[in-house]
Length: 322
Ligand SMILES: Nc1ncnc2c1ncn2[C@@H]1O[C@H](COP(=O)(O)OP(=O)(O)OP(=O)(O)O)[C@@H](O)[C@H]1O
Ligand SMILES: [Mg+2]
Figure 1 (spheres, rainbow, N blue to C red):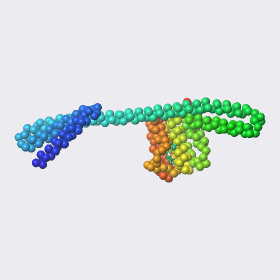
Figure 2: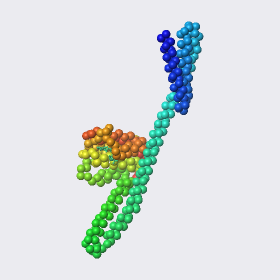
Figure 3: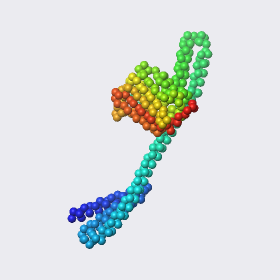
Figure 4: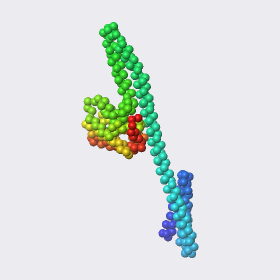
């Protein structure tokens, strides 16, 4: 009796499994996998039904055992076929995932380089468009004979000259920030050093740049990415860290460019910080666009440590100046 109940339960479960696998046939490209499993479950249920009948008569038991063995062989073949095709499904999923990641990287790369092109264009417009207009205004004012103007008007002209001078400097600074000339001419190390030299802040921490790059040049896209990342991390240290010291290490080897940044400031809680800004998110996108890896570590009162690795095939060291 117990054996019969178990067999009936097995038949019911196998029919349910059969129904589920039948419904999956149209869901994937490799429907043969689900057809094989369905056939397997159907035959299993059939075998159990035969076993159930055999429990009622010993004569039936003898005649069914032969058929049952062959059904078992067919079930095994169906399951083997299913396993082969399910493996194919997983390989396909893996392939799709890699394709998706590759497309994502390509898209990011395109967005970042379009952004850089726009910055360059804007910088050029400012430098070549607004710059000469301001210089012309400055020259016209300096050509004025101030003695003729009287004290009051002369003061106004002097103040205007001063404002135009400020506007010229600011235009140059904005243009240079959008498209750093030092970076284009002399490479990463010099550009970061220049950025550090231009920091005017009373409470600025000591910044140390350790790099084996010297005058090594890389492809422009990569240089811009490294430069922007360094600037953002340095700016964050200045804005939030209240640090005494920050160290930036860039080591270029044959295989990777290893970029490490550390400050000893107040740090932040990575779990609970509200990421309102775009800085760190942009850094991650920039790294991803070059197939790099990034690890950001920070805890309150324990500073910030950022570790980035770029594969060499994306950085393309150029031995000569571009
Ligand atoms: N060096 C640091 N020391 C302490 N806290 C930091 C540091 N860097 C980042 N943070 C914290 O992480 C948050 C996110 O930084 P992120 O650079 O993404 O944005 P943001 O600097 O606030 O804005 P944005 O970069 O867009 O101007 C910051 O608001 C700050 O709370
Ligand atoms: Mg920031």
